[in-house]
Length: 366
Image 1 (spheres, rainbow, N blue to C red):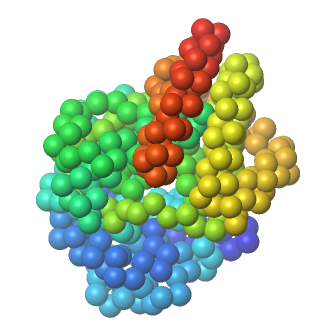
Image 2 (tube, helix red, strand yellow):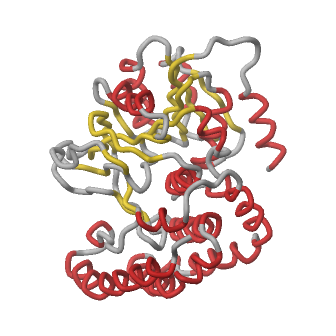
């Protein structure tokens, strides 16, 4: 598999002397079908001169790559022989991109007029802003919010910020805990300095991990409400979702926090284990073994995780405390549970997380 990834990377590298562009819009596709077609139709008609659109096809089997070649001849198509996942596919596209800014979009999105200029404006205005995310509305309910940046819990659990709120909410441009991978922009040099997405994540939490690493390196994550994107979002519990989400959460925490911080967070993380096991047993019982597989992956890859910790430490400018201060103790249980269960979970877990967060912040001053 490693040889296939390296071969794909070599094919994606630009050849010859190419003039730099302002922005490269990168979309990773895996059997996107009609959703991808509509996404590209909206993007191609909105991208100004001096920008490019790149689609990385992750070994699709639904002929969507052929449809791109037929209907969007000006879109650059990069075919991967294997499915590299969301992060790996985006890394492949970034290697070929010529834009000063890299813009990442999900294939099940559509963009509103002026979305790109509004997304890039904060990067032009402030060198301390490293990543900018859009106001993402629900495609099926365009008067409702999908997410306005992501809300990150102190345990690393990440949920949509503002999910279900009216689109008139969250009108203020502001710093957020993490960008949403569904629609965000980043300077090329920032992306390269961070080493891009972590290929090991494959799916889920790559955006939070990239955001945390960017913040540790001194950049800010920003929300631009004037950049509007519509997302065909539905909460889906796929057979491997718990494995990827839990494994990636552990990996992110181990990469980013110092050992004393993890020790201070231990009571909080144990409460999170009770919570996530409860979710698995209620919503995904047939795949409960995926939680155990997440633990096993961490043990098997311990030496690799230690190497990633060393890389994250390089060039670190922000303290663990600063990261924790941008996290919250509340979880919007309505996004993952029925109203009665959500209410019960909030009454049980919110006070526990409030107290444990306070204890952690009382200790963590580094």
